[in-house]
Amino acid sequence: MKVEQIYTGCIAHAAYYLENNGEAAIFDPLREVQPYIDRAIKDNATIKYVFETHFHADFVSGHLDLMKKTGAQIVFGPSAKPAYEALVAEDNQEFKIGNYTVRVIHTPGHTMESTTYLLIDEQGKEHGIISGDTLFIGDVGRPDLAQHVIADLTQEKLAGHLYDSLRNKIMPLSDDLIVYPNHGAGSACGKNMSKETTDTLGHQKQVNYALNPKLTKEEFIKEILTGLTAPPGYFPQNVLMNIKGYESLDTIMDRGKKPLSPLEFEVLANETQALVLDTRSSEDFAKGFIPNSINIGINGSFAQWVGEMIPSVKQEILLVTDKGKEDESITRLSRVGYDNTIGFLQGGFAAWQAAGKDVDIVERISADDFSKEYKKGDKLVIDIRKKSEYDSEHVVGAVNIPLNRINEHLAEFPKENPFILYCGSGYRTMIAASILKQRGWENFVDVRGGIGEIKKTDVPKTEYVCPTTLL
Image 1 (cartoon, helix red, strand yellow):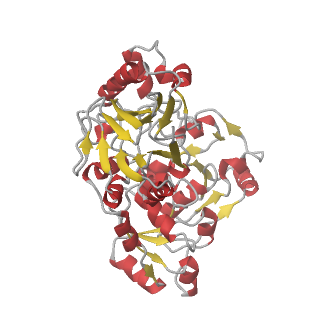
Image 2 (cartoon, rainbow, N blue to C red):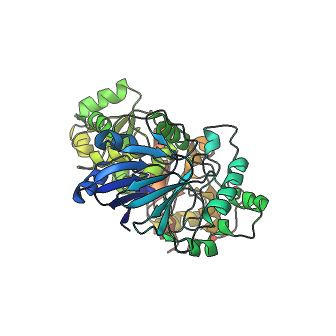
Image 3 (cartoon, one colour):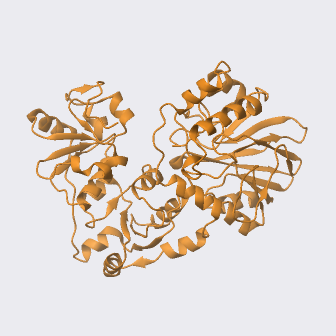
């Protein structure tokens, strides 16, 4: 059976391309749809359907642009209520892609409209399931997201629905089916996802904790809800965009790709409430940046941290990028709904410097220098990694303030006394440093390379959970 997984590692997302006899379907597409169109052209195929497994929270789907550009019909599972033209399928309804069959299996739990698509080949043999966020490799979709959009859909109710869907709809299926999930490790849509992006259903029945047949519904609900962290703030906003619709990516790109001279950039930044977002590497940013700009490097977990640190997807944004990275930055912002880029600094930071504009820096120290400072014992050390990372291993005496909670805990960063920041690699500390600089903090340094480099020194580490850790 010709089914192709199209995986985008930076957001741990899998779309699927299905083609037979000149007809194609796309499942859960990303915002930029031209690669799917090009893939169908390569096969001399027409995209007939765009299947959505649910209203996604962690990215804005490309279904509307695909429909407009190809004439493909958008298909959702039962109970979906999109605010645009789409076919809302019935449970067990079948669709033909050439000689292939796609059967709708309504599997509520992650969301109420969540749907799994059973793929059947031209011989009538069941090949696999495109499971969306109902079933991952090693995990299942978290049931606490829809309540942020529909208040009476409690996480307990959704977890109960998920239990029923897995037991009654998924587990009775053949063990040799291939599971094609919507996400892999690194996604915030689950808590225990594997790095593997496909598996057989039979193997998942053996190893996936959520498919343990001995679990009662009550035990399942407790198990599935234990250990969930708060979802990123942009999730409910993305859900609403996927339900209500959005601007074409072409429009967003045209608006964002406006080159600005240093003077024009400065004037626009002062005249608007635009956020100056610098997507260069943490090392380059530290050496010099536009005052009050925020650093989220394009080569790290960019979409995740944009979503965590910029509260509103409607925020206007002015970009500072490496040369040639403007399009990529705008595209990756739009993947998570940040559609209001209004221009970029032509010539990048070098042009700003050449124009004689004010610049700022962040002081970084090596792990060896950190070891020397640490031994003096006169500086507060702040670990901005996730609590789970901190609990696993951290510098003795370090206080844990996770990056995604920095705005809630600014009072805990001293302004008069010097302090030191570290994270896993130095990527997150530069986000934190840029925020602190924007808010007026100056008397701090961060550790280049983070805990990865600190572990090579003689600085004592511990697995003990410090009482000062934020819960």
